[in-house]
Length: 241
Image 1 (cartoon, rainbow, N blue to C red):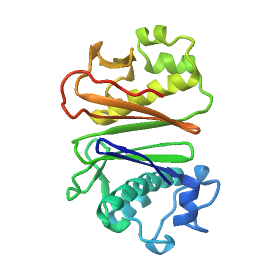
Image 2 (cartoon, helix red, strand yellow):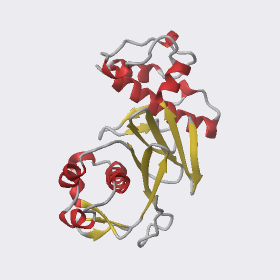
Image 3 (tube, helix red, strand yellow):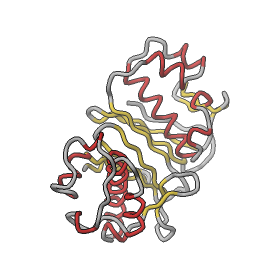
Image 4 (cartoon, one colour):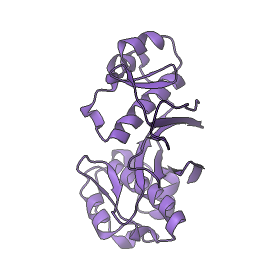
């Protein structure tokens, strides 16, 4: 687990899933979890208290072990961030899903959070001074770039990024997904309606005001965070990979 950055009230934690499993579920979940059916976990199987009873019940309702492990990893990342702020034990920090399906902390914690998974990693971001935040991550691995451009990029973006390298395409995709998580709309809003052109976010061809974007590359992953600007007015500079 690594705390990657802390700035402007934003805290971000990356969890390497195989290492987490060794630490939290030794001899219970090993290699090959990606293809196994779901398990019924009990508190005594964990090396330390991690989940509240409600969280454990939610975990046990998932039918694939891969989904269970990803949920655990995302919550473990969030809990580590909150633990650093509060000193609470992990099982005292409860995360559930709201009506949109997005993970949220219990009302007692006045933090906005967002979680993403890709490959062997889970990533969580926390913001103490915002009502919402969005994060998305992609492992750098071969993809069908023309198919991705066709599925999720506007015609203008397809022209602008024709011939772009894999890292650039994945970066833009994570920005789009992070904004959708920030808005908590998910796939209800088409990714093609969200554009990243000339270092600016657009929706339906109009610039999006009041948000900041940060994109990073860490080893074999790329991730982007979308969060509200402090002033909430006008367009703002963004960071690049």
